[in-house]
Length: 189
Image (spheres, helix red, strand yellow):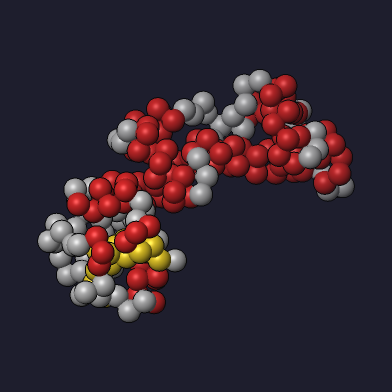
């Protein structure tokens, strides 16, 4: 998907002209007069807005026959934001049962809560809280099917300190109460 000059969001244009590396990985920009694409943080000469096209990923840029900038090397390595997010997702996958706040995640990743929320949502297509709840729900369904633990214990083990909220959340997400889900899907042994 391309965004041409008259449709470039002012936030993206500002990131390009200020070389804002917090936008790296969120989009790439190409300069039509050179057919080169860059990261927003590239320190190359500021392009004319009328010559800029926005790409949402590198594949789009390559597909439209743009080549990577030799200065900012957008084709090399995982972007630091992606690396941070991959490490954070791995941390959440192992600590989902704990009390997790956006501030705690920001502290772990050493970036501001606002920036973390923004890059996580743009990259993973869901907020950090939604991802945490997705992991908790996946683990809860597994426990309901594969163990005889009580609903309260399962709720606590997957990170819900309030059993009532756990049941309400579970029903909202699956259409079943935890008890109904267990009855329907638990394997008979």
